[in-house]
Length: 175
Image 1 (cartoon, rainbow, N blue to C red):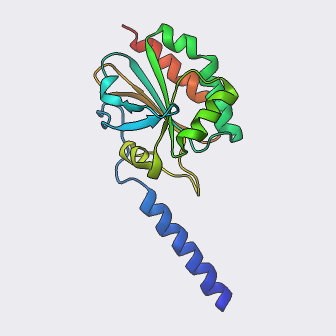
Image 2: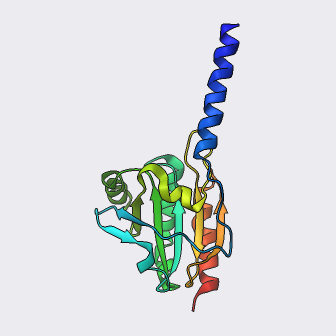
């Protein structure tokens, strides 16, 4: 009986934790992106408001530096980086890891784009990125020059597909 109660209590705690971390409103195509400022991999303050209107923005949220799928995703964006810049797009990666962790991840994989540290997942929540089990979600947004979401893609295990799909949309938004 104690085992059943303990199991039920554990499952209830997990459910409440996941629900508390799940955003109330996910952003959709056509929504304006929230304004935010975060530190990049070099410890410099990055303000999204300074980028809106200058570039098509490709913002992707990923769970963990150096994990297998996240590394594959980052390297896919790296390998397509020249194509993104040719169409005027700026790639930005966000997760809750530290500036130092991002710097090491950038160096280890020669990542040419911006990595932002989101302690407490505040920006994750603003964008409505949903957690998956015990991990933060993996979702990519393409933002047009007016600061509105033109495309969103969510897939936890298909890291490299994020770059491919985002690039196709960025090309369609080219001036």
